[in-house]
Image (cartoon, rainbow, N blue to C red; front, side):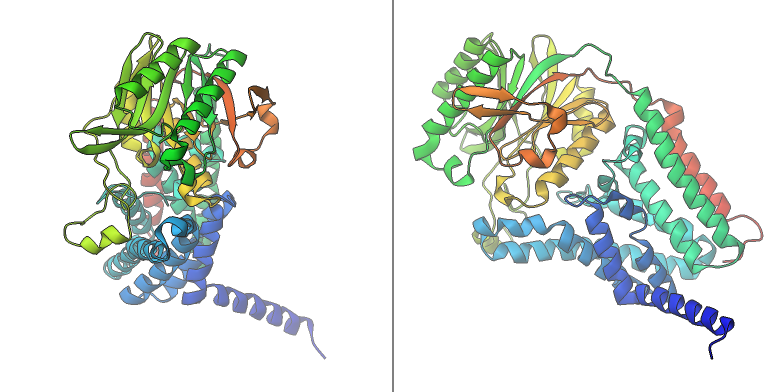
Amino acid sequence: MKTEGHTADASAYSRRRGFLLVTHPVTGAAVTGILLAVAFPRMAWFPLAWVALVPMLVSAVQNLSVWRTAGIFLLAGWAFHAIHLQWLMANIMWAGGWALIGQQLLCGALALHWAAVGGLWAWLTRRWSRGRWIMLPALWLIMEWLMARWLSGFGWSALAYSQGAWPAAQWAAAAGVDGVSFLVITVNTLLAAALSEGGRNRWIRLAAAATVLTIAAAGGLALARSGDTVSASPLFRAAVVQTAFAQETKWDPDFAETLFSMQERMTRTLVTSRPVDLVLWPEAAVPDDISRPAVRERLIRLAKETGTALCVGGSRGDGGKDYNTAVLATPNGDFYWYDKVHLAPFGEYIPFESWLPFLRNIAFGGVSAGTEQRIFQFNGKAIGPLICFEVLFAPMAGRLRGMGAQALAVITNLGWFGASNVTAQELEIARFRAIENRLSLLHCGNTGISGMFDPLGRFIPVHAIFYGNDIRFYDPERIEPAMVYGRRMAGVFDVPPPAARPGLPWRMALPALAVLLAAMELRPGRRP
């Protein structure tokens, strides 16, 4: 006959067994990779990011040798990136089976960064166990900073980019992407510490984690209120044209005139229906060398006819070099261009091509980099252009604001990757560029997802559908971003002016929080 004590013991044993299963080195790493991946778009279960790293960290603490910890971090990093970057495999139509190999090589390289953090954390912990939980967030942020900058830079998987739908993202205006990642990794670390170490320290750390979550949410809401520009007069009115042309036709000379004429017709239809100051076409929208006089004159003629400035993407040849270019044609006859500065590796240029010539058979190259960033001016207004992959680099957007840009304009062509999760992920990255700089951001993609972010990162998707020479507008509040993917659509937006950026107290808030948390860990009398 089972007694009440036996039942309680069995229940406790069951809970402990389940906990040990989750924190087994292999299981813990796999659970972390899966939870973190689904926290990002397309699934975007963003709350999971605040706990996703806990299984990996707890299992690492239980097996704290340098190589075992590095291995746990490596497996978790690979599992996360293999799911998170599945869009690279969608490129198989253009690159063949090499797309799968390339995707796995990149996932492995990024996972090695995680392994380096884990191994270094374990090594440092052996020498200063008291600072174990202080060192981990610092090492993680250093890793994200390096990943976003060295070689070509690929900060695509920063923890912050999972939080665009939550008020915590507003901390990017005060502390950038690194600040939001700091909040996420800190909560994960405090929870892992609470589970790993019992006694009074457990409750202190759980209380600290709840405090950090409160600061993330309440501070984010306060930052949003301080930067709201809803009541301000619009800066200008812009239209975004999502052309949704198939990739096969975009590079087929037989379709060049058809595509060009279709975009001209869509622009005339749109401007006739709703007068605007600026019209955006996507990256590579002009199916001809944009430097040819005939193409230049055609764009200027369209600008004069419609009375609106045109910002369009195309390719430009000059001195035997080819550039990925954005141009601005105005009704006054002005014609400006910007050559993409930060090229996409293996898509526009091939790293180490001279050393590894076989890469020419499995990657794309041949595009030359521009030499400087530029802003486009029309009607006394200024926009800062970014072309596709450039939206990933926060310093580039910040530099445009410093040059006088009053809004950002991102033109992309992600049709290479089909209906994968890349469009939703890139859109969240663009949201952060708007929040960081407190600038509106016009986002124009060939297949989508196109629309406008206001300076707080709130998104309005394209909301009009072309029917031949007619266009029908719908209520944008009834349209979800995913609904517009791959459809030939347009949107007209009143672009809000720049919002005020947070002052010094806001910028010092997260560093002060880090100091307080470190003091908590190092308080007298606490035993590691």
